[in-house]
Length: 304
Image (tube, rainbow, N blue to C red; front, side):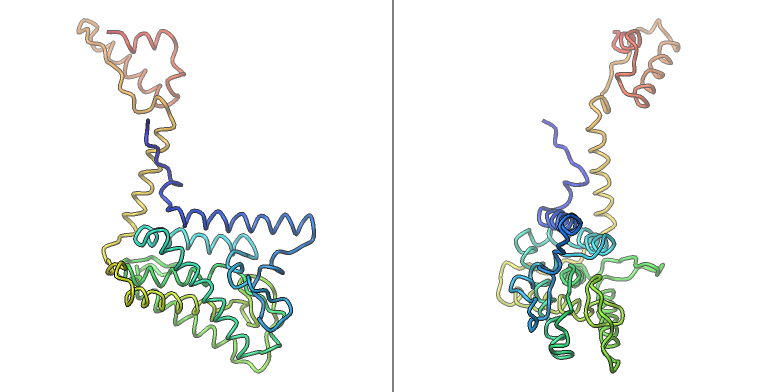
């Protein structure tokens, strides 16, 4: 039996299922809204706890809701890139706990910000998206692999992961404070991670995911002896090359004739002309596959 490796099989179980679940929920929201005029965000997005639209499950379910495909793609691409090495390092169970705690912590932080800044005026605000959990993942990646260099668009110079996390957190803090610097509430629209803000992004929820992720890591370091030391030798470029190599091997395995070794003629009397014929047949196999050969060519190929 052949061991088939593909691009999809290189993704760990929890990360893979998170990608699938988020995609399914987004598609389900599209279909249900189109056919039944019911928006799932009204039930599963995170509303202010003081509003009549809040339900106890929303601090968990909101992280699986997304406003549009662009919102979904950006979050899931970050999950794929940064969650994969985390799950491989920590194991599926620990990584899943970390992801959920970071996401719920982001929602709790957003609730606190709503209450402190707006009170009951935030009754119609709703937060959706996995960005809070993603920020927890980014922090853990920077903590586990601090020396890994990342290329961040549009900067042409690679940045160390730990520096990237610090800069990103600082930018989020400034953006969050900037949203609350005005005397009036901004207009809210239910796109992306929303709150009463000018850019419609829940920056403090992002910081909450990072904060809760950090606190969980500190707890694990303090109370869990099985929580390993910080590695610093992870190379994301080498990992990506490994993924591409496995994907290439999978494509070869899908061709039942690719990689076969055919016996070449051993009759010296045939000379260079016979060798040239065999070379032409092998080139034809590489281009069009074994089934493209004629009966005469097959006979010539296996002739002893």
